[in-house]
Image (cartoon, rainbow, N blue to C red):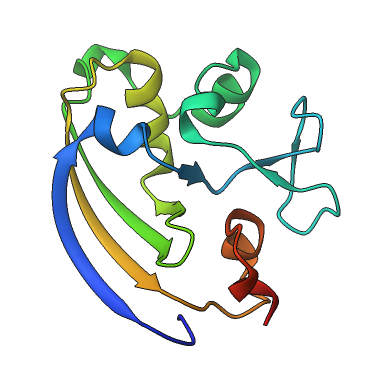
Length: 140
């Protein structure tokens, strides 16, 4: 829960618009961006969903056994997101598999329904936001 400026939003958008912004999965890389690490690794570095989707190894490790392609393409997804209202970076807390699949295999026209919790100041110990947020409010 944010320490300040807490707001909750629900909105819909096209996948291409969401993926094109400063959006991040709850997956992190080392500083060189070549291997996945936990959020509490000293080298944990955020990777945008658009960049994550370009790395075949990252995608395969996330999606292996997750989606049955015989069901057809994913045309929509519901995402739960946290957003720092100060630096405008978002981290997808729930729906990561869907949004990564869409980023890799989709057209960009997929419909996203987003529930977002935004705040202008997040607790320093907030695992995912402490890696994704780029502003000084995380260090307070």
